[in-house]
Amino acid sequence: MHVIYGGTFDPVHHGHLRLAIELRDRLGVDEVALVPCHIPPHRGETGATSEQRLRLLELAIAGERGLTVDDRELRRAGASYTADTLRQLRAELGEHEPLVMVVGTDAFAGFDRWREWEAIPQLAHVVVVRRPGPQLNPQSAAATLLRERAAEEPQDLHAAPCGRFLVLDPPLLDISATGIRARIADGRSPRYLLPDPVWREICRLGLYGACPEGGF
Image (cartoon, rainbow, N blue to C red; front, side, top):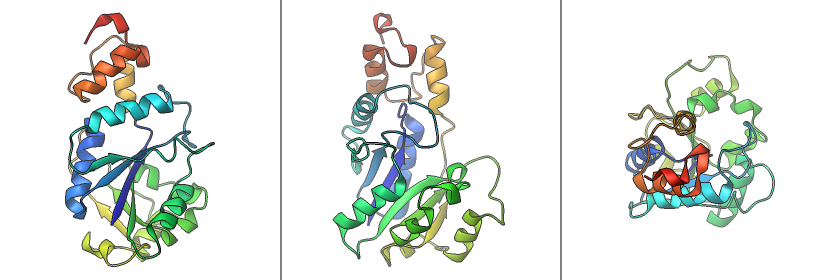
């Protein structure tokens, strides 16, 4: 089973990494691929370039068993649409390999506004990670998919190549990339919110308003 966990990772932090490890263990897979997007279609410009975010991700997962980086969206021109990525992966994996994409409940609430959203269940399973905040509207397309295509347990995803929706409620670290960027811009340290090698590289490159001369 191939599992992808996408996002802007602007910058990657311990919340992202802890969730990736939870997914690896809960889904019973050897590997989870983190997929940084090139141009996010539903938000403004990122604080770091695609190449810089990729570098930070590579530093973050160095030496961690079972976490990899897939840079295919960075190598594709234009906005990063999930359906395009899944279609490319499905062509590589073949018809029978289970493919899983991961999304938080906040983003999943607008699932029916994604481009080609109706094609996604024909390409992959969807793991919905429950996040704090408002719950899904029971009448929404997202909630309907959860009811009609519900998987009861992770093992169900191994039994078919696509089409099931599984809700997971793992322990989450209350860390946000937005908060980290704001902290750095204010001249405050984000240390222990993200891996030390990532913070060192942010300082070296002067990202998010960090002072390169300020030191680690």
